Image (spheres, helix red, strand yellow):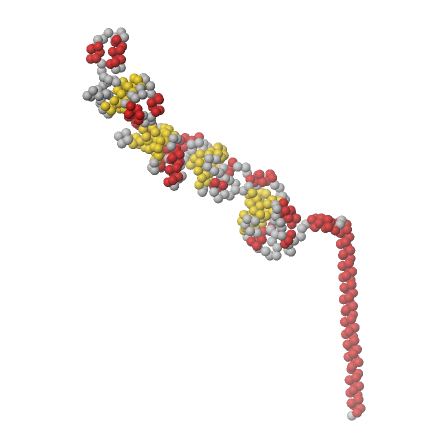
Length: 473
């Protein structure tokens, strides 16, 4: 209580002590410049604040000091509040006793920072500014520095422009921090979001368990996978576990900011790493395919790759089936690459579905020409003349041939009768051919006999000539 209050109480009849005695007994501090003392706010005016610090006179916070204070502080203080102040000017030579409320509050914040560091606590601080080295955060009336290496959002970024853009966006936001260094004399207050995040992650890790299904938000994409925030801790979904389909980059199936379901496959508390699986939470494409298709169904697909033993065909939904070379239509000794190319769309027949082994067997040979023509027409493709009637094409099934013959030439009985007539005619033609062959043989025999007769006729002539010569002699 200052002297003014005591004299006021004495004048109101609350004390009979003489004024001189009061003045002699009243103890007060002798303010020294640079001291931090505790004071009580007496009144707040527009251009000055009066504070009782236990001296002979009231201390004043001047207008220049008020202009330098945050508006939030001015709105929060009122008469009777206890505040620390820093003595900037002593009342010598008739001058006023002046104090700095801001420096006093800073002192209070330094003391609080020392306690936070000792207790290894986490505090939330607002980002006020940023520079190339990091960001500046508010801790009461103090400014702490968080280096780039201790900002979690920058750990995946290497480009300086991207880093600066992220830090600019952080201004005005709050971040959890831990104190690394508190030195009031050097005015050094170094903080780390990374360590605060690490502590939060360790706590969060203990709350999670392997095999647990949970939701998370995609926060970053890389060539090898996607990082997902699980509520204070990040986990990695490897690119192979993002989808049942083969993908070249995670952006093909997820995007930053998207909420996804994942399965926790592994937790490494020491290294603070979590392995996640998104594919396990998606419907099994093999079960879906088996529910919608049966053996013998037709299905279209795209030739994904070729091997010596057949074609790998993508039928959609991340499923790739094999059409063995024995189930391909290769005519006239054609090679696989002569008929099919990667990227070709083909029509196949399902010949086997093995859900457990994840295998699908397909056949192109078992697709009839008419089925392929109908499929091509349905998809707006016009087959060429060679495709409609290939020279070396295998005939369609007997039922289909008979069906087409019935439509063009009459009933089945008529076709069978016609076939019998054609068979009888063939027999007659063959009999006639045999008769002609026998006749030709007889002619040849007669010709040979004729030759013999002629030789016999010529022989007597020779003998007769020889007889005439003998007679003449």
